Image (cartoon, rainbow over all chains, first blue to last red; front, top):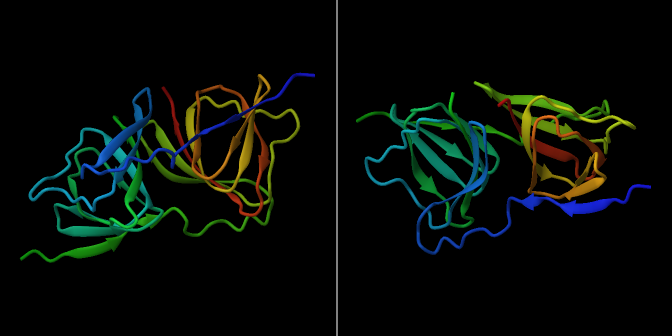
Length: 115
Length: 115
């Protein structure tokens, strides 16, 4: 009879950054082919600087797994996100973080891919 | 002054299937380019049938966001997953579900892509 080896998977919630430096922390979980998966943490209520827009060459699908946030778009739309809310941000759809909660910190799971 | 429109994002936890039919439910969240994102729910403690192996042409990255499960591999390794645990399953890495919890039901977020 074949022996069975029990293993544990990697956990998304392990080793969260302390965020004491006040920066958003981008951690690569996986990169394979044209796909990259990241954990993004902001623990100090970070928002995007005035007049700053994310303008990315990759498509992004992002889900907020902890915290609350507001994402702003160039047409004036503001999208409020709470735990479990997700957004698809096609490449070059400009957006910025208008609000991110501090308690609890925002933890995002993001998938990026070029097409 | 430009008016501000507040919108809500789609929520991952909304409208979970009742699962009363005893099947795993695969729901497409997004398909764009070579990437597909799905929510997978199993609410009846489903396991893969005897001698059945998932053998997929796409790479898969999957995270268990609720419940507990055990995934088995052809080399006899069994990987136990709890909330937040994730696995990368390269294309054609055969695997099967050996256990999935009923209380709470297993809810997975899966990203599939061809390379």
